[in-house]
Image (cartoon, rainbow, N blue to C red):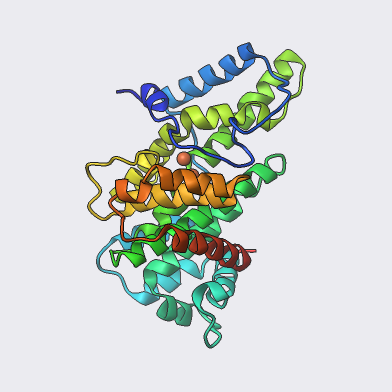
Length: 317
Ligand SMILES: [Fe+2]
Ligand SMILES: [Fe+2]
């Protein structure tokens, strides 16, 4: 199956309530179907020709991912990679001292932060700080990117919670949740160029919400898959990116992909415009049973989403 076919088959299957949900939006579209078709074709061509560029993360994030994927590394090496970036170092210490990480005695240097939080938590945090600073850079799309960031961070926290509740290996949980929709900010960056070109050619202007939701629905899974490969992410994260809308998985040995599916559904439900209705839908669909997560309690999970969202957003504010 080629990537463009993948793009079609990978379209979001679960409800996606929220600011950018086409099913919930009543909007006056300023863009014709023909123009939407043009944008869709351009994105398809870009995917096929491998022209989609990943968000440009500060190198400290990818360097740390590479270092820690190697079985043999020393804490001073981790500190050495991070301290090259003063912004990341300062942000890391701020989050390490927040309620999100239990706020014990204040940590004032990187070495202490790594010792307190553990290398995989530090790696996750560095990636999250880098990801946030990268996707919030564009002025025109700031509202959309902020929505995507908050969804990614909350899903990451909830995924880790679900894995911890189940006493499974949580080492990839946060990043799998954080990056599950990486196709979306990547698409926004690509679409900016396409839209600008079209506006110039047709002498019109239109807003992101006129075309972005359709493109997300059609392409975000396929584009995310390309980025996972480009960044050489661990297999479990790539699977979470490519299958986070698929509740019926044959192959999920660590339980991480199913946790991302559930965290994504819960985050969309709790943070969307109709939380009660969406939570009821999750219950009616028997999602916990379907994912073989029966012993988990939906009410408790919903409370966790609210708490995770609040703490995470405060820590990264
Ligand atoms: Fe998604
Ligand atoms: Fe999502």
